[in-house]
Image 1 (tube, rainbow, N blue to C red):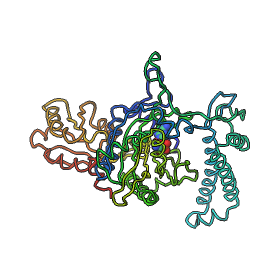
Image 2: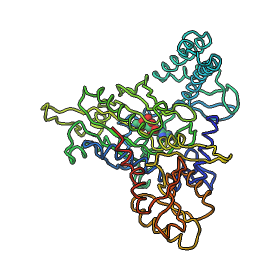
Image 3: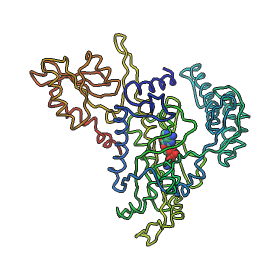
Image 4: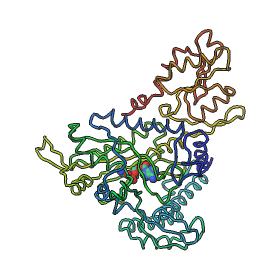
Length: 513
Ligand code: GAP
């Protein structure tokens, strides 16, 4: 199946099976805002738990907080968001559609890269087993030409972005003959800067209302609580503060479902360290975070690092962990070495001293910070895209199955009476009443057993149990595994032991090094 089709199917599957709905659906939705349904919220909570426990439970020196979304407006001046959290925008005069100039150019770069990959794929097909890919890439005239075009564009674009040269960004769009996908024309306006923060008012006008902002990242809530946590928790450097919470950005190019949203959730951890040790800690966190992702078993080939060439003025290293989505490798998490920029800025703007007294060195300093920042919704999307599977079964039948890691699955066990009488529903409920304290169980008695299995496959339930007449006599049931569809007869008393070890977040954490 073409990757584009996979993505479309994932989006409609999310809606059909109660994972993700457009926000305000009965009013035709609200751009780039989504709601999580009955199954989505369970999967999302499991992702958050996996992250939180891997950070806070598994590290003695990392603690969590939950800071408010509304914060003092000066925080955004200090952090640089008021002045510099901008996107370069361009409008097409014919379609009246607005685009991010940088995204238009990046898509053009991706087109050159696609052409190269297509050339290589064609050659691979032509030469079969004897194909030497590296040699072909080095010697093919066509590949060399496309690579040269791509590299020249990339260099020109990087320079323009580094200098935030808006005229040059526009000129690149014109020179590359980039057209508006709606109107098909090149009738572009100037490029302008657009601040991504949402504003609102706090207090009534009579009181002298002040403008406040919906936080565009959770990180600043951690920085401004650094002193509170360090002092009350008697934390010693190196230590980390973790937080999960909502963030808001007035994204202009809000596309690809929950990949780029205006209201989304982040899981961020700021790790406070001694100046001079940051590059070692940066490497450590890169490895740890990649291990966390790969521990889900989606295959190492589906992840890659993308080291930033263009660094923010306060960062001295930055990388993204990218995942192979159906629309290409895309950023899911950022890891940044942020120096002491944020704490120093808050020291300056608040007038409070924000230092750490290092008892071993006998001196005070402003700690440096390594940040790990992952979007819950992007993580959710990567899990859904990788798990969605259409399978051809023997006898010409097909099934849609979500091959979710069992620890992330919304429902762990479905219990189904074969028929709705003869005491079978009561027996099924007895099983649920016993197991519901340990994991999420669902009772299902409607339709044929085959249809019920399909329903559970579609939401990724790893185990289904069928209660039949024999169950009343000898306390045994049939347990069916989602992935293999194998069935076994087991004693009811064994169920917890068989299922629990495989479906808990602890089972995932134990595999993490
Ligand atoms: N504190 C650093 C920070 O916010 P970022 O790279 O802007 O860094 C971190 O964002 C992560 O948040 C991204 O890797 C992505 O997973 C998620 N994210 C950012 N903007 C998003 C959006 N509009 N919709 C969904 N997720 C987003």
